[in-house]
Image: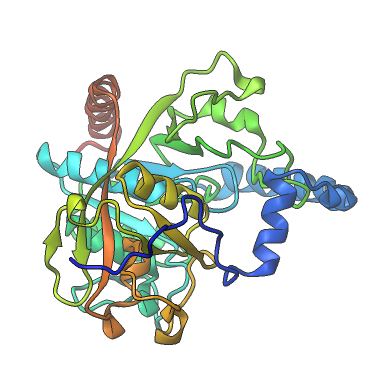
Length: 361
């Protein structure tokens, strides 16, 4: 890989203005010093009431428990927290231990004529959404998308899956679940701690006490949730592995570009996390942040320099058809403590036995 660095690349380059002003406005209110969202407090009380009624009704009358174990990987906040790397790590662990997992997802950003939709090697992000395509390409497991996760899960049962993982869907209570894992952004936490729309919370912070594990993505040194000071959190670190060329699929070591500036493209919930990962690998970057699930065009990625473009894999699946020779995505992996994997293995075995006993399998 070659680049043409300036004499003095910026140490903390400014973010590109391509990220929507509306997105930044909400982010500054939820995670920054702005307080204008508190004018929406009456809507928050209405949201809390309606959410409680909906949750009660779904749990009481509509939730369906499947014979196949279901693991939900979700969050209690709006936006990305790092669920996808964790879900991929869980799928790969299950595959390595003899299971046949499948993944259900809403497929946000994609659209097909009929649902549920099972991904194939030819599926695109425009059809299935960027995250499902990323999961399918990384794991090769069966992935099914649709607004009705229960129907998608049943489709995976028909495919022979013996474990089903739900990408997001912590609040999709129609689908019964045996294990719940909540992911929290270790840099931003839960923002101002308020429910929508005053804050970013879909459910109260106390919801974290009801799940099996709370995984904290890349926790800051001073990470703490004062409301849950006694709760045990599983730390997850995102590790950069390599750079993969979008046009050729060739893989390159991170050292091949270390010290040289790049254009960092990120259409994720927290773009700063991507910049931090590049910085930890010795790669200075100018951030070009786009809204989460942004549908890219070639003109979006025309910049006023000749530096290489490095993006997340979730962005890459939407840019491969018009990729340039110096475009790459950062291949990453999620690292979790050995103690978590040991506890996860025991929990899976226990759930499997419970299912066999209950459904006579």
